[in-house]
Amino acid sequence: MKLKLSFCLVVLALMNHNLFAQSKIADKVIGVIDNKVVLESDIEIQMNQMAAQNMKITADTKCSLYQQFMMQKLMVVQANHDSLPVTAEEVNNELDRRMGYFISQVGSKEKFEEYYHKPVAKFKEEFRDAVQDQLMAQRMQQKIVSDVKVSPIEVKKYFDEIPQDSLPYINAEYEVGEIMIAPKITETSKNEAKKQLIDIKNKILSGVSFESQAKLYSEDPGSGAKGGDLGLVERGQMVPEFESALFKLKDGELSDIIETQFGYHLIKMVSKQGEKAKAKHILIVPKSGKADLDATVVLLDSIRRKIMKDSLTFKKACDKYSTDEATKSNGGLLQNPNNGNSLIDAQLVDPDIFFIIDTMKVGQISRANICKTHEGKDAARLLWLKTKTQPHKANMKDDYAKLQDASIQKKQQEKMQEWITRTVAKNYIVIDDDYINCQGMRNWVKGMKQKP
Image 1 (cartoon, helix red, strand yellow):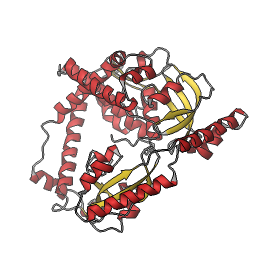
Image 2 (cartoon, rainbow, N blue to C red):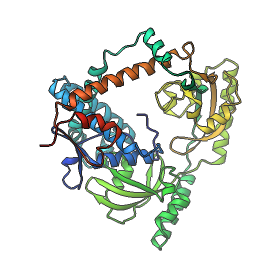
Image 3 (cartoon, one colour):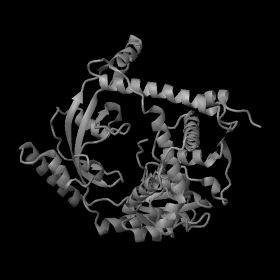
């Protein structure tokens, strides 16, 4: 799952840890597979993350998440039965990798330990079982579908079985590069942002509602329109500075002004539930000075001229000048949020980018244009239209790779469903009444053992 981050949600990938063991939290068991459980908070936390990241939530989202959690537990249980090897070294390496990401966001191991009030070694130990389960589920899934392959004949058969009037329409796809430069924020701009947030806090303390001020002024696109509501969050979801301040607050208390990589925050603790909290916040992002932004535009236009004269390649210019680490590591190419590829469906291209590249010819580089970074800060960028495909109905010649992927996925899904049907019958399973009618759980219900 490719997640677009909101103001301060950091996907740690330390998911599905044993919330049931946190005795301070009132929770409900909504699924059981042998000795593994799924909790209501698992679903709630994931839903809150999706909402904060502006991901689409439908009536079927809860059912889909429930099925995913139950699938993971089932695969872990069966991996244990099959004695699939996940070594202590593999778990340690994965913990080190993830903790390394954590620490890099803070700056140092010492700062990390200060924020979380516990040593890194303790933190890793708390997540060891969760990471081991995750690795075991991955190993089990790989075992189930590892031998799934499709021949050209099977791809052709898959294509031929699609009714002509149901052939998918392939939108135009773009391959776009960017060189983004965010000018440094001056102390004056930082002080202005802090002063604005202090004024907002004083209004709230004098009786103005927090929610109205969040709707008027917060620059967090994920929560501002909802009165600053972040829903239920838990330790490990937020950037450390924010989290450290949040969990020091009492119910109903306002924080001091907190600085993070996203800007300045005023936090309101709604209610604390052990290692979880319901919270609201207001975000103000410091703005770059006009002179600094103008200078950045001039710099980018000079870079553009060098590239056009072939005295500098786009990739080298990106390596040297871009301040956007996400694209810089990929030669400046934007990534498809669904699959990580560089070809992006027209409907998935950021509207601000599409407005510019739609009138460009392949190979052209735009003039510098003002934009926002992922953190909402002022920046400027060049856009390069590397390739563009024309919209068309799917066909074997132009879309063989897509059709091959689709036919493999179909075959894998069929194999996974066969495995579920066999495996469910071998295990003690309880499905909560609220989820028993979910479409994805129907085959589970048919095959599972009856409650004793």
